[in-house]
Image 1: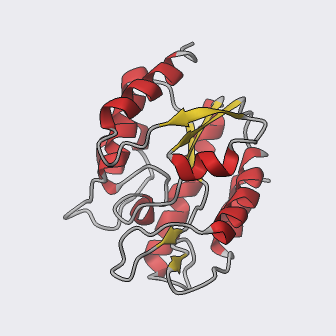
Image 2: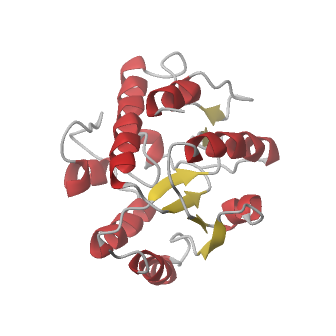
Image 3: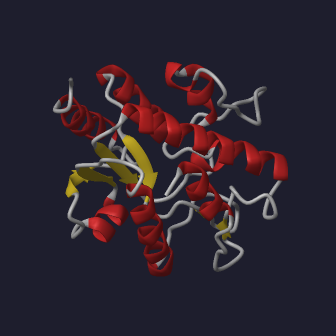
Length: 207
């Protein structure tokens, strides 16, 4: 599996209902935005291949202020415009009023502090929404689809350990051979615990 084929696989994925959004697919949303998010993800995967990460962090699903807008897990427009990691060809569609997802900022602040760059993904890589467009929850069918996609992602990297951010991904992957532990999700009062756990994990891999 190459990054190009992986992104194409995501673009072509058909979802189950109107509350599941494939933001990589040009036929399902604004074509320009979909192509930009696909390009961002492709650039991210290629850059991560160069960095050869050993750690994979797996969340639940893209947030409407974060990955749904950027195309990159645990990343919002703010990170693309302000973090050194994204200098270069990465783009945002909304430069006048970029969104900053709190969870994404917590994760990236910790990554930049340790200077260790784990691969990041979600157990369901598309956006499950509520009726008002905010973040919904992936169901069992979504998670099963996501687990198949995750295995394809893993073929591109030499990952040795997987940590799950949040209980949904932990429940789905706790029996996976690479699973090593759970990290408290930064939302709902979990910021300090998330930072401490993630910093400890990343510092173990300091070169």
